[in-house]
Length: 439
Image (cartoon, rainbow, N blue to C red; front, side, top):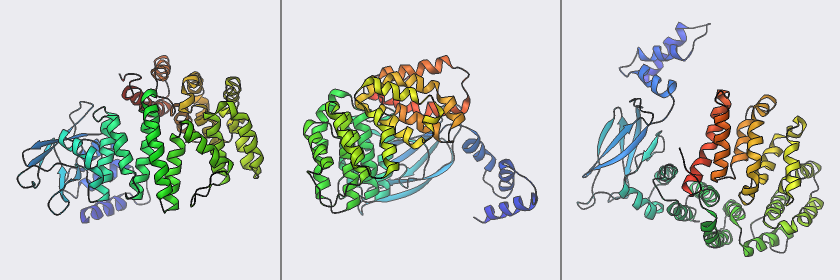
């Protein structure tokens, strides 16, 4: 702390009433410490990418092996915390990753190595943390029993990242997400697990497996909704249930909630909630969509919310011609003026249940991206891409994106990075669900 203050004072004094950039600050700090701040800055600030940090068991000790996935041979100096269970519940060891390999001692349990080693137990490390096979197997079974919430959350993120790399099975993550979202779990962790559960269901599980999985997920989430004493928890379970509900019985229950025939104590449904239910019903019951949406429009009293509903409604229409006409309207600048409405409508247009027919909108949406950037808010291109690609996980959708990239080798770098970022989950989902491959 003190050398940092000294360097900062020198930096401010040297450049008083003038301009200075990041390199000047790095130089000032580098002069007052034995640490190589210039090397730190080159890796962390100036270079792209992230480290891979692998846990390697060495008897009763552990090695953290850091590598550069881009093959440049660089290392990211950082501090992390190694966590593991012990006789008293949980133990943590601070570790400084200042080279390619760092060894840390951990206690054993009556002469046996600890079953779980969490390499980023404080959640502050940055990188792809690869857990050893023994830890993965133990966490998939016992993660909810770890005694501290932060290591539980950090371990869940590590497993999620490993799943995205194809190193942890999706079905195991579904079961673990269901366990981590239990009423007894910390609310922040439970909410994260519920959000990830819906992603696992829609993006990382193929249609046939999804059909087998849906009844149990619907039942467990509904039971937890009824049992919860907290309004916020009820709301979280309801949102997850509403997203996943696809079986006839669950859709009937959704309709009863929307119509008012079913009321759940402690779960107040606002006009916005009722509108979302109506739009979700329109996706699930196309034969009743028009009557449902007509009835919902009459219910909406606020003129601004009614205008929003009228804008979104065509995107949820069961008529492909109406959906085509809606998307065509987005080519006009005035139709994109309410960007939040546009993003919401695109999510219904590309709902996973409509994904097969919605693939045809991906390429024209990509063709519009430069215009969207030129005429919209700074965040609109990313949200446009997220809403366009978020409901897809098919090889066909991946093919559309790849064809666009191949046909635009000189695409503007800022937009290219946004597109690659938003397409990455699609490509991983296609591979992990068996619907496509990654390069």
